[in-house]
Amino acid sequence: MTPGMNTAETTPHQVSKWLLEMGERPATFSALVELYGQDHDRFYQLASIGVVADAPAWAREIAELAAMLRRFVRFGFQLDENSKRLIGSDNSLYLGDTEFQTARQFLKELSGTASEGVRHGRDYVGTETSPAEMRFSVGSSEERESDAAKSSARNDLKPHLLHVDDQDIKAIENGMPGYVVHELIHCARRVVQAPTAIFQGLRRRGRLASGRAYCGKPKKAFDSDGKALMPPPNMVYCVYVDPEGFVSDWDWVKEDPVRPGYPLDYRVRFVNQIADLTETTLLLPNITSIPFRKGKAWHSYRGDCMFFYASDARAYASRVNEDLTEYRTMDSGKLVGCKIKDFETLLTSLSRGDVSSSVPVGAVLAASLVRQMAEHQQREKRVFLTLIAETALRIEEAKLQEFFKALVNLDDEPDRYLNELCDLVLRMTDDPSHRVLQFADQVREARRSIEEPYLRLIAVAGTTSVSARAAA
Image (tube, rainbow, N blue to C red; front, side, top):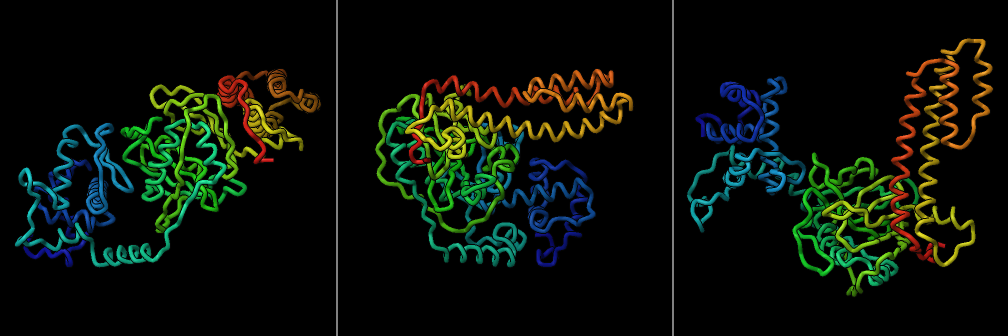
């Protein structure tokens, strides 16, 4: 320990002075290893105390990186061979090839578990530990008190029990892909017990606006025979729960590259993230599954959604819009099924009060497409009104009356409306670069992007129907 440098007396100013004396350097993992080699205690102080607010940008960046490394040591970490990332509970760090090779041993050294031989770990018996290292490893008195309070609060909470509704159990036992069943039993249970993130607000409206999503990184995935596999890289497992505590959906989704353990589009999909200290357990009955029934569709009342699988190939979920999620194979990305949300609303639009025992999956997809296109066209109209007002300012006064009269008489059919509006603007302004024309090109592309996934799925679904009795 540096003479006279007791951590209790050390200030960010002193840490900043030392770092400046060491010289400017980039904020990299290698730079931290080098600083640790120069002075262990100063490195511990850099990670625990930080630097002054007006320190140079490079110094602040190194201090932030050191603090991140400290969180990895205190709260756990893993090294991902595929992406060359050091992954912690709240962040991740990409490493170079050389850095990745030394990272495990360096982090073990910081956490006091570095091996000195094949069988023996680091021996602390009779070894004096500096206050700086103690603060780095176990935290300040304030941090320890905060951790103890959180632990006490967690222990006082009663376990939260989750279930699967009988209707969904029957669907599981009636021919769902085998991997879906095995991952419910193993992956979903693991995730609700140890989530990396919990979100609230599965839908923007209705009963599921207060539903929850538990996201996590189970150590294994499963195939349709129940064989354990390595989890798919750069993906997280999500379990969706209604307000009454019933699990209705579970699947792999792509992971946010910046926030490990978070779904790629979590900001769009969910209303807000929540911190829940309650121990959560998923209770399941003994589930017996039968061989996969190709072209089968199921309706979940709890999840207000419809599931359709054309294949039992292992797949992940990819969100298309608020209604539609595609299922694509893990290996090739082939489209093999879908999930349709807000099912009962779509069913009402189809049935008009006369609900039959089953409805074609293609009809449900078509109803969802109509709704998505209608919402898109409402957004189009708002933009067009603004652009039309701008257009009016560029038209000669003598032509204005003719312009508005022609505008009122435009065809209501979306494509004709768009073409006629563009022709009208060109005729009145003689300006091929007009913003209305540019926006029209964007609208056509947006319409195609909405239609294409639905049309592909309608073709895949064929004559498949879904039971609608429970939603009637």
